[in-house]
Length: 208
Image (cartoon, rainbow, N blue to C red):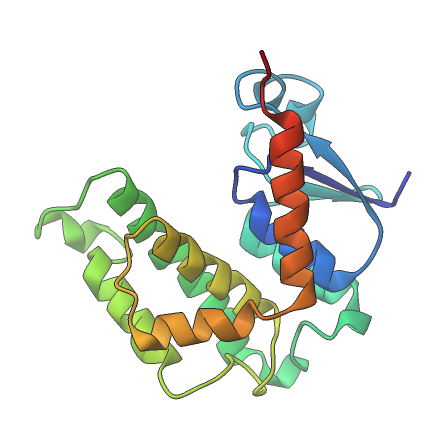
């Protein structure tokens, strides 16, 4: 058994972690979970009591939440060179957690068909969808990558989030977004991750 165990469903945010694992290059085992059954039952609830995926187990350590998993793996496997030098991590952390906080909240609410009223926007960390994604577009304008002018876990996480929004047709496909996605997904690890999730999706699909 590999030291790394990846808990996922191919139709989930686990797609982002799969990509990260393929970038890292360390061997890992996969445990697929069903939304209606195994995700909300033991033994998985002992891994994540929220009954959410993805999660990883690395030896005796458990990490949940996609952004946390990406940051953890970048640090746990430094040979993959997916994190900047510590003194250069300001933009790296800023973008990862802007995407996992305001952008993900705005995306989730937009996908659910809900938007906060002007009064309620004061209570939310992202204001409204257009504000949050507009800020993201400005942050990405004029740069190829987020940190050190090279691909890092920040590009992987932010790129995956932007890609999800484009696929769901929730985000205007401006040149800033589409060029960024084309650049950060033009990687062998990304192609392997997509192929593995597609294969798993076919194998796990109900038959009959």
